[in-house]
Amino acid sequence: MNPATFAYHRADSVDTAIALLAQYGEESKLIAGGHSLLPIMKLRLAAPAHLIDITRIDGLDGIRDEGDRLVIGALTTHHAIERDDLVRTLMPLLAETASVVGDRQVRNRGTIGGALAHADAAADYPAAILALNAELIAVGPEGERGISAGDFFLDFLTTALTPAELLTEIRIPKLPPRTGSNYQKLANQASGYAVAGVAAVVTLDDGGVVADVRVGITGTVAAARRAAATESALMGKQADEAAIQQAADLATEGLEPLADLHASAEYRLRVTRGLTRRALTAAVARARG
Ligand SMILES: Cc1cc2nc3c(=O)[nH]c(=O)nc-3n(C[C@H](O)[C@H](O)[C@H](O)COP(=O)(O)OP(=O)(O)OC[C@H]3O[C@@H](n4cnc5c(N)ncnc54)[C@H](O)[C@@H]3O)c2cc1C
Image (tube, rainbow, N blue to C red; front, side):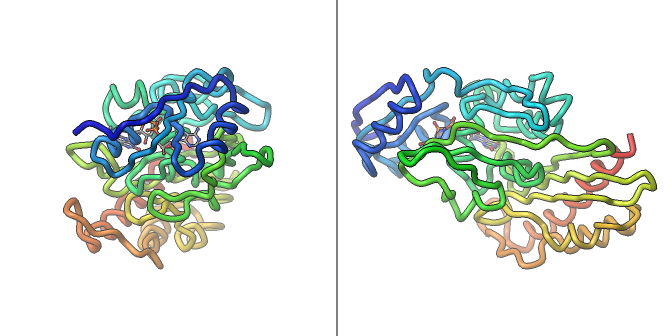
């Protein structure tokens, strides 16, 4: 099906994009890679009267090292993140996550900003963004604000961004030594989206005790979230097989699982616990070097 008719506007700066959003309000939508927006427009699930193209705005793509953090522009494609040397060295979890998003065409066009702003329940990045404790930078009529990953994903297709705001960049604190990470997902065989996905970041002290652990879950629930009970159970413990298993068994505590034709609620929960065990085991092995 073709999308409903719309007017096309090309923004050449963040200020212009924000002015256009203010002018056309709820009738308008930003468009980046178009790989989530266009499919729902073709299905007539969305029919914005005004599309604001942000892909030509200078400075919104690219990856830079800012000392104690890595900064990724909202327009950076999944492919660029997967291939970038800085990301692969400093934030391998993000490169690993980008490499399993959809297929090559999707990775070449889709952007991290679009994926995070769209907040599909089955999207991959949210798990990694939570586990990496990232900060998302939004710019709107009132200026710039930072939103912590933990406060960003609110519900199905709903984030803390207001309709007047543009996501400009993602800031990720660098990881300490003896830190390992891993992303595991059960992919929908047709689209590649995560039926369930788990990202783990583990830091060990010199004695092999867990000094920090963060686990992000996506796909299982409407809005990605941290596995708080798993994290508390593993903190301060020797990261052996028994401790990891015990902590992983708590990963679905308090979750309200989704159920659809791809997976029942019960299956999603079971898979999530299994993926958590695998992600933690791989992250610990990498932390040990
Ligand atoms: C066949 C297929 C398979 C896919 N498989 C996967 C998968 O396995 N895993 C996965 O995670 N994703 C998957 N995706 C989604 C893909 O990752 C998209 O690229 C991504 O979700 C959206 O990014 P985009 O740049 O294309 O955004 P767009 O489609 O352009 O925009 C999406 C939404 O975000 C808003 N938006 C875009 N940029 C900004 C911004 N900077 N600030 C504020 N709002 C913004 C738009 O207004 C729109 O509402 C798949 C998509 C397709 C078509």
